[in-house]
Length: 359
Ligand SMILES: Nc1ncnc2c1ncn2[C@@H]1O[C@H](COP(=O)(O)OP(=O)(O)OP(=O)(O)O)[C@@H](O)[C@H]1O
Ligand SMILES: [Mg+2]
Image (tube, rainbow, N blue to C red):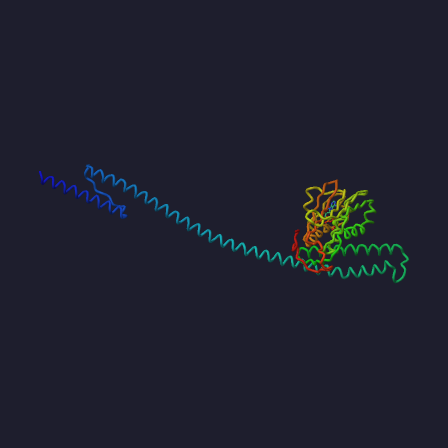
């Protein structure tokens, strides 16, 4: 009896020891560890439960490994496409740089071409103007046939018109390439505007248009390019006269606003512009097509050139218009162009476009 008990105890202890070793191996990473179980007692049930748990852990572990591998592959693919994207961005940047250089070269070539062309055209044109002026004044003797005199006047007028056009084209090209020369001098803004209005007085009177001035009652001393600003005011005033039918009114005013900017307003009660056409008129050759405008001379350079010239002085030009009611153009020049008491009378500088902004 005692011997049987000892045998049973030894057998039990051996099975428990096998179980413990197996568990230890499993713990160390041998996921294949299983027990051959022939008994259905408690230890056998324990072994079965272990085998079952080991199976599940092994399957879970395999799934985990597969997922990790999948993630690694995704990461590698991502890295590859990121490298590829960097390459594409580099390639595209280089392509854009080349395109930009080509566009700049083309712009320089265009400006050179226009400068050369206008020079080539202006030289003979000035000769035509000079000789037709001599003939119109009959400096070398009288012209008896009045028809000839009329023709000479026409040649003179057309040549002046053509010269103005060539100069406008050249100015637009220069402004686009940022090489406009600005010669600043100290002037009074109201005097400049009234002198422009005076120059166009006869043209307005021919159409029975009234120009009404409403000018600042104190001097508006400003340091600007006088000729360029006159060019702008004449362009805008000329438009107001051209696009206002007989008996209309044109209001011109000068002032400083509350931000101390210099403001010129030119407002007419003429044909106005359709809302959908307004965006085009500051583009070169952006004329509005209508029965009225078709009967009027012009190429569509006045406003785009005026915009460039005003921007070159750091200012802005805006146009508001209502069809059949009229048009109002507002020119704003920055407050920093105001003349300080200590400032010298004459300045000369070449400003790149937009080098000055409204302050
Ligand atoms: N005061 C205005 N009233 C109505 N339309 C205007 C007025 N000013 C300009 N426009 C419209 O804007 C267009 C562009 O004006 P812009 O001064 O640039 O050219 P243009 O007067 O036709 O020709 P250019 O000034 O070169 O002789 C004009 O053709 C006209 O259709
Ligand atoms: Mg015009």
